[in-house]
Image (cartoon, rainbow, N blue to C red; front, side, top):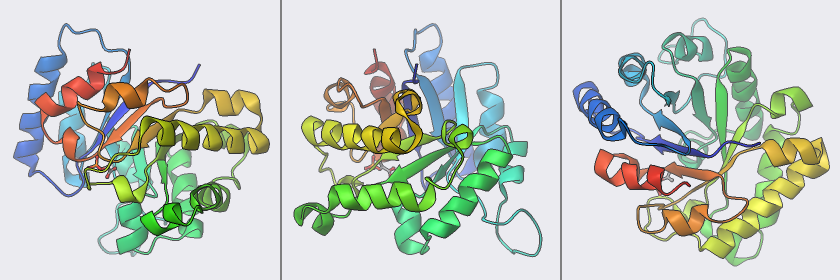
Length: 252
Ligand code: PEP
């Protein structure tokens, strides 16, 4: 059975002290609550080890938001998958639209990052999604299928089975314009069908597909009630424990 997951993405927000204060507050809020999903917090690199320590022994995991496309060596400023794993992080967000757009991350480079993450026992949360004009010109299915094929469909069945996918329509990220529950379900079902055609029904059924894009306490329940939406990747609303908690609780 695929897992239900709510993952936060802090992006480039929070000092280390602010990150620790968030983590201790969230841990306190979740104490003695029954949570029906896995919770993952995507922090900047420098927070990973300290935040992982706060959540040690709980069901909350920590994710990096990126890793290098090289194993090690003279790549000033880069952070390798092995370094991320050494902090206690279990996941890494890859292919986020901000990394594709601002840092020109290509499908080939993303494939290399996914393989390095997997070989270091990190679970990639791999983001796909169309920009507004691609949706308006009815190219969204084609675009998302190409993003899957160009980076992920070169993986073995065994490796693909370890991934988490996040559908994040770029026009919904940070804009307050959420995809409707119908639009999310339609795309998630399409992604699952595309995975099934490549790797078979069992792998497709077991792949968690998260929705991301202006998801918040007000719309999470409706989005998550769709059969192919297995949770969310949350940006802005993951920055405050009191806003993030109801999204976690929206999974039942
Ligand atoms: C994101 O950046 O992954 C995201 C979903 O952001 P937001 O929730 O702020 O739209």
